[in-house]
Image: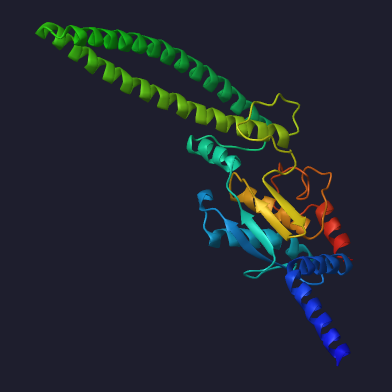
Length: 310
């Protein structure tokens, strides 16, 4: 009887531990199956975090993911991925300063391509924007000093007159007009601040995209100061993450639908277990500077090798 109770207790402990660590165990099992029997079962994915500020719907995002998976599946005529709500592999759309900068420039009519011409154009716009801000700040500084001087003189005179206790009508009218003029100047200064801040926002967007292009194009260029942390240069539009908590794909930035599908295709390639390829035209090249929406021979060869296909 004691042995039975002891075995039962041990069984309950094992079941409890298995339940408590079910997610890490499930992830470990999934990794084992992928390594031992690659591509034997389609990888199930679902949509995780989804930020609507990208301006696309979940339905559109899912269709783009499905187009990305078909780029891998069609050449080998095999289902490699399948959408299943609440499945372990989460594909997240995460909005940060990368996409903010892209959209801000697009609203200004600036078309962004991952090429040297765009980089040169944005650098020229950066120089123009910098000079405009310098001129605006200089003008603001002069106006601000003038305002502060007049405001101080006004306050001193009002304080002095209050101590005297008597004010003629002429002085009263003059001070009332000066107060009105000072209020109008204050409004103008606030408007100037708004204009300067708007120009600075555009400058920051230019900085973000210029630095991204410099890294994407592998240019030996001077890095402009960034408002955020400096990131690595390898396919920074997205990333495939695998750790003890599971697998996930994070998408951070895209210029248009073509770029979104391409970055999704790249990260799905990592989900299949593929590494980077040293071919700028390849989907699995470390930088997202290609324009093709089909696998190169190198991509296809790596896929067949990984999936043990002939």
